[in-house]
Amino acid sequence: MLKKLLLTTGLLSLSVPALAFAEDGPTAVQLQNAVDSVWVMLAAILVIFMQAGFALLEAGSTRMKNAGHVAGKTVLTFGICAIAFWAFGFGLAFGDGNGFIGLKGFFVDGSEEQAAAAYGVLSGSAIPIGIKFLFQLAFAGVSLAIAFGGFAERAKLSVYLIFGVLYTVVIYPIVAHWIWGGGWLGDHGKQDFAGSTVVHLQGATAALVATIMLKPRIGKYNKDKTPNLIPGHNQVLSVLGVIILWIGWFGFNPGSTLSAMGDGFFGYVAMTTNMAAAAGAVAALLVAWMYFGKADIPSMLNGVLAALVAITASCAFVTVRDAIIIGAVAGIITFFTAQWFERAGVDDPIFAFSVHGIAGVWGTLANGIFATPGLVEKVGVGKPGLLYGGGFEQLGVQALGIITSFVFVAVLSFVILYLIKLVVGLRVTEEEEIVGLDLSEHGTYGYPEQMKKAASGGTATI
Image (cartoon, rainbow, N blue to C red):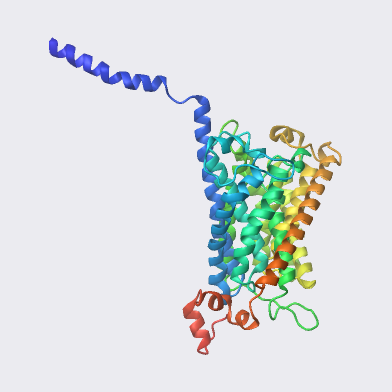
């Protein structure tokens, strides 16, 4: 009997901590914060993984002699962006400040003080400041990768280093603050849910300025100004890159809800994103087929990306039907503007401005046309679009954001690149460009066996 009593007492004593734990379990708020934190962390990983997509897309879309350089600089520039955004960019974009710039939150350390100083789109979420930082860093890295598309196959590696730091500190966070960080465009109701303007138009504008200042690649244009085709060396890499980017966009747009709880709105955003991309792929391929008489694969890939860029601003504001329209229109206008820029003498190797700039403009304006009253109320930014009873007011706000952002980025990009040109120069020498940046900048080839074959008189294409 005594043994049974002692055993029962022991079991009860062991159960007390368990009972206490059950009573002190996580609250609903704590559970929501935990789920949201995991979701945004996953979204950040997806967006950072988009760097792999850019590496494959750009390497495949350029020549073999530059493939290693193009892919490798993607890693280097994201590293530069991460350090610069940690030190200054995040605070300038999202720190408490004024309508033009943030003034707190530099050198992110995860402290409660910095968490309290996060303004704009980040202020309504209780997820840790470290996860907020990583998510926004991923966006800044994508914007910088877009900008560097205009530098491809002819810029010095040192230019990537210098411009990367200055773009991340002086250019990107300012417009981000205007729209997302509690700045003046956000106060006007500018709708840009995940960054058609903040991320894509900014990067594309810098790419356009760089493309013009660097001038065309050797052999791109004839004496009569007609363009020659300089095809990328591997369409399979380009296709894989676009598929990775498409998947990464499910972190880009749905992740911008900053929540996986409630009614699962992030799922709706994912749906509009996907349907727009699908429409862009089909529309771009069909229009290229009619224009060239052949189903052009690079045009289809550009259509996918253009549609994703366009729906990025409006994914949370429009119906699924309107998302399909936005994506299809983006694929079509990107195809024709890419042809126009090439004939106009702008040698944009990966069509950065057409895909990310023109489509970014269209996607931003699309909010002013298609934003529905119910979704505008749900998101809590701006007013409905023209087709849903909102008149021209929201369209005007969207246009204002486009114009001011474009001018700001274009002017600063020109000034920075002009100063870099005076100090270290922008472009490699003619001999280095002909040899290829793999060898001239890094001392080795991305495809050493194929390049040796070409050097010895083989038939490998470089």
